[in-house]
Image (cartoon, rainbow, N blue to C red; front, side):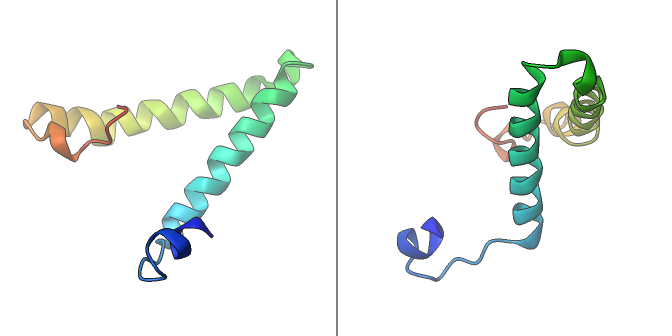
Length: 76
């Protein structure tokens, strides 16, 4: 794993990070497959919309409202 080379083995990824990595790989794979059969992957699109709406409402907007923008990831 790249973190063992970059951090000399001192950084251990959190188990939640591993699950998120799996989620994003699955979404990317489904997105590529959806290019060939778009209607079959409508449930994946709905799952993404629900996931991102929950993240925005439960995490990002409260931080922005309280003036803690620095706690958000840089790409947000």
